[in-house]
Image (cartoon, rainbow, N blue to C red):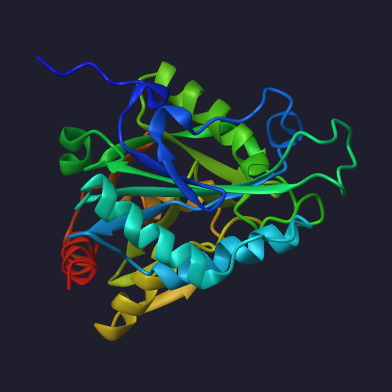
Length: 292
């Protein structure tokens, strides 16, 4: 029988909050925090393997860029954040797990403008073996085309990992799960394939990898890593717009992301794929890399 999930506010351990390590239960914010009401919040998702964060520097740099994009003056430096992340893993005894650094505006102002609000930051970590159900991941997950689309780049700073971008992702994933799928495939405003709700997508045909250009969604760190791994193995990787009617032309499909890692896809709507050589090899190579 599966163990019941422990709510995140009921867990034990340490959280780094505004420069101090505090007990998990004491890491709290006020209900009138601007980040809660107006989504003035950025974050990162990071994986630890063997007690070390994979590509910590790249994640921390992106967090700082995201904060700058949302007009937040960070109270902590890159090195402050990296040191806190490493010590937090050690304090919590997490070897293989997930880190969530998050930055938000405080409760000084509740209005659209909050330039005088303080900027806060926290980092939490916990053991987390897999984003998708292990059984589903082993045979490939199933995606349903989403009910919402990624907006055009003129509508939001898509290059920032901001919480505001994930509301439609939550709605789309809820809809997909309610219909028996594992996740949703999001299209962009043009009707082109964009990504899953929190992972980038790759398709393969004739020994060539294809992936949409990240011109309205986040260019994932894992996405870039997998492209490098593929090209290092002599595979051709083409970034170009892909339309849903092209899906039957592809042999393989997989997702990439810090949480998802490299995850095979076996179905998108009525189109079936078979996890095969390219995706499975990149999954194995990526697994070796993160533990090297």
